[in-house]
Image (cartoon, rainbow, N blue to C red):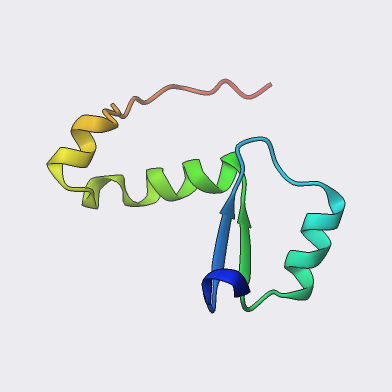
Amino acid sequence: MSKVRAEQGLFVSWSGYNSEARKEAKDAFFTIRLWDQGNILHEIFKYYEKFDDELKAELPLKRIWSLVVEE
């Protein structure tokens, strides 16, 4: 981040991070965030309705409902 003079950074990895990366991000909590696939999907689902139509066309999602049988 210092090379590009950024004050904050968001690192995104679909496959997750090793323990060293997680430790460094924890030590720099106020400047670095690590997102994995769970974070990405959560934020997409949270804000999808606010996306503009062009972005929704690029990422077409359809909400479905399903019953869950508890055992």
